[in-house]
Image (cartoon, rainbow, N blue to C red; front, side, top):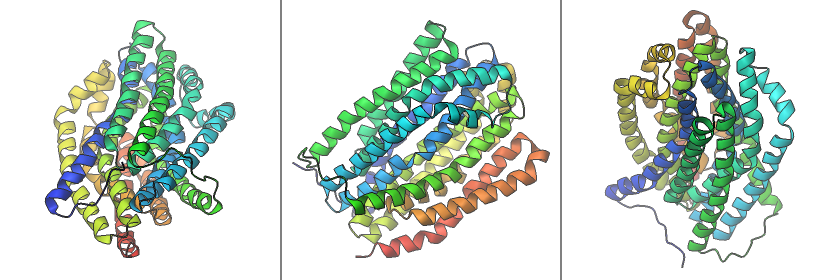
Length: 445
């Protein structure tokens, strides 16, 4: 029997729905960067900062590549949540299968082109030869997990569409816990260093894909799917998928640009600064992925509201997600301000890295508040598939980031990386807010 889903009708019900959907996503999302935290923490137990620097460089490359393919999750949520809002479970299955076919194809292409891709990516970094060599080892092992991880993106998108947030928690926790224990086993147990980190991540990514398949199949059955495969290759539907996907790729490129360029610029400031950047970025990603929980809830509820033609549902989704997002951001920033030094000490035992990282904790502490509306409006625009407006806003925000970086990097050094990132987030939020009323108007029946 299918599970009936409706929108809340009172403020109390909205608060409850937002938190019912968001807390598992926060817990699940935090486990995503915890893969990187585990890698850095295990490397931080080793005596040389070069190990952290190498993993930071290698992980930055995978983040840059995988974020470009984030449309596999976001595009699936946008189209899938709207289909769910219309009560079209078979169409949701078809959307997931189309996205899965794209994911496996792209994963195979990445593996096949790993050598020219490595030449392109490593050419952007000006690191010491020993660091480059370690990072290349990490890269050529971990890249074999690409098809599995991209498939997991699609599975998360289907689960978000169905508002199965606790299943996303199970999937993400499974990935992170497996990665953590394999890191400890291969690195601290067998002494495989960078090789061990890469092997552990590779195994955990394919394991998550297998577990995700089972979770998605169960969720679809419980929402009325008869297990009969729907018609997948429908020209109109495929064009819609590629319209959303192509614009999401462009949007994600400009979102990722400040992060990837920041790592490249940190590399030019020396091995210790690169290691510091690796530590601080783990704190940023824990914040970003947890704060993004409210954006994912906004994706799900705004997509459902848009598909069922309920504009007030979009307004309420934005209001309640923003309210709780601001509260959560204030708590996160306070934790970083007061306990940041203890967290850094957990991630690395190097006194030099600890001392230098401590100098930049102020940026980490204010960043959560700067990100609230940037992330939230992302969720609304993705859920309602207003991708072109979002793409254009990201391009303009990236231009603002570039101008700030050019004007400040020589004078401020590493501080300029965080100052420019802050400008990027604020401009991004303002531009999306200006286009938000258009979404609410277009949701009218």
